[in-house]
Length: 416
Ligand SMILES: [Zn+2]
Image 1 (cartoon, rainbow, N blue to C red):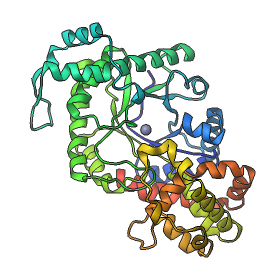
Image 2 (cartoon, rainbow, N blue to C red):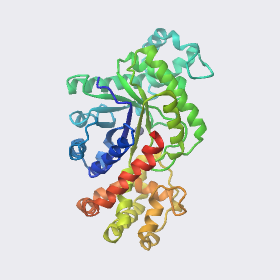
Image 3 (cartoon, helix red, strand yellow):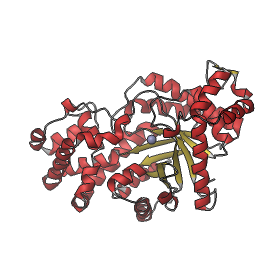
Image 4 (cartoon, rainbow, N blue to C red):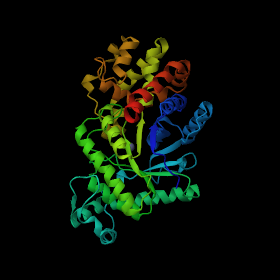
């Protein structure tokens, strides 16, 4: 297994045009004493929507690393893949997020469930875990229920993992994550313990796990939920992971992966407190926030850049239902709050950036517009060279926004 560094930070580069500006944020963070490893992530869904290939993400990352003289590690994440989508990611990627969300709830063989229960008497009864005040009370029927819910999913994860091992020609080439965040209901800490036992049984050297936490993790906007409840759950998950590493011999690098959907500012202080208190590692994915900074940069540039930003918004507004559909579980757009095409047409660059840039205290900020544009990258993809050329024409101002956003709004609050 390739060891995963302690702090890893996932950045999405939708148009394979922002890697330099993204990496610049890691360079700046390093100067401040924060050692964070960049992980370029782009899921099969995003590649399909844009019409791009994982090898392009690899080329952009490699070039940025070479140009900026980055000597630290960096990784390329095959984000949310399964057996049917993994193949084109095998060669360029060295981090694989095995997505088993769709398999959760699929019944496992009764014999497999029975064997799991027989193998794990330690999961039944009063389970005391260091760092959790109230011991878990888990009954045999709880274990059976959770096994029926998740055992099949872990078996499918093992099949994807073995497929990658065979295709890569070895186990030392990559980091393995298992994700179950894009589901209806969150996994509780006791469920996480049972899931980790099952993953260990499958022989998957898991180093990051992405559960679904309580609350809404909508794309591009802040957390919706009770941050204190999140804090309790996050801390308990950390304790469960430490316990599972010792009990089941999982890699000591195993850590939580927060598929944040970007910009979960209100829970960052709790994440920071927890990792500083426990010394635990963290993987956080931010994805589409960078594409939004490209639009912010174009709008700030004014002139043709602003005109293009407006065009993208207006087209996204026309296609709002279709653009939202693949992201139904991770956006909540209130259509009535979206400004009309005519309104936006009259906006200055500042009005546009005030509405889009994620500064909640700015009276002009509009979370619904932001979410719509977050899922609106298909529009820019359809503009093809026009969009890419605009990014090149305004590269300095776009890069500034990408770097400042990552460093100031994400890395410093999380790690400094
Ligand atoms: Zn995810």
